Image 1: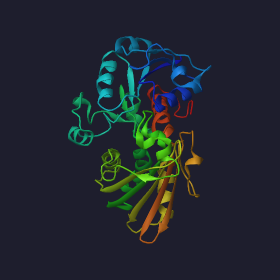
Image 2: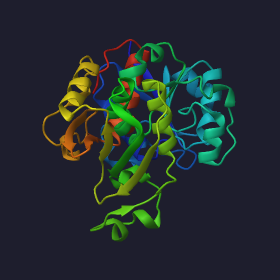
Image 3: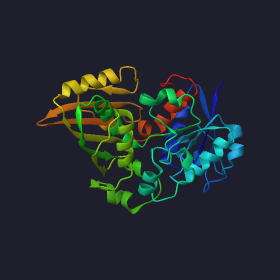
Image 4: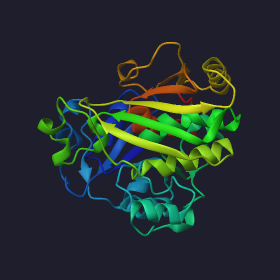
Length: 335
C-alpha cells in the first residue's frame, strides 16, 4: 500500500524538499497540501521546479478532511501555530511529523522562555519522541507525533552525544561554531537575507540567544545522560544550503583517533552517519540525507567537524526517514 502524505504549510523550502523527495519515494506519494495564503493554486505554481512533476492542489487547512486523505502529515508551520494544528490532526486519527520546535524540548518553561509564546499543547511537552532515528527509532515506530529535529542541533547532537555518554569529553566546556546556507532562514522576504546583504559576506547572528542552543543541550543531556554547558554561535554564509559545524571540546585524556573509534562503534548500523578521515564540506553532503563527521587533535582540545544539508538531514530528509520508521520501512527508502 502506498503511504499517503500531506503537507501543512506548503509554501516554504522544507515543504518543497519534502515534495521533491516524495517524487522519488517508491512507497509514498504526496496527496494533499495546504496553505492559508495560496489556496486554489497547485504546488507547482508555488514551487516552479515541480512543474510537470507534481500538480497537487493547495487547499485551505481542514484537519478533519486532511486526516481522511492521509496516513501521515508533515507540519511545516512555524512554532506556536504548528502545535495547535498537530493536536487537531492527531485528534482526527492521522500521524504527524512536526517540523517546528513545539515538541522538541523536555521543559515547557524552557520552551516558553526561548520562544516567547505560551505553549498551546503543554501536555505533550517532554512526552513527544524526538525524531532522530539514530537514537530513538524504537520510540518513533509507534509514535503518533514526532518532533523533527532542528538543523543546527542535528549537526551538534550527532557528534557530541556518544562522547558525553562515554565521558570522553568535558561536559561544561563545549563551543559549537556553525555556518549555514541562507535557505535556513526560510523563504519569507527579510532584509538580512536579501542577495545584496548576503552575497560576498559572512555574518554571525543570534549570538548567545539562538533558540537551537537549548535544544542541543537538552538532547545531548537526554542521550548522553549528563548535563552539558555549551556556547553556540551560528553564522550566515552566501550559499543556498548546507551546515558546517566546527565543535571545540576538551578531552578527558583521549585523542581524536579514539573519538573516531567511538563514532564508528556508535553509528555502525546507522546508514546516514559516516565518520570520515577527510575534512567534511557542505558540498560533500548537498542534497542528501547523509552526515559526515571527523575529529582532529588541536593542542589541549579536540576539534569535531560535522557537515549536513540543512534542508535534507536538517529538515525534510529527516522527516522522510522518520516516516519510514513510523511505517516499518527501511530508513533509507526514498533517500
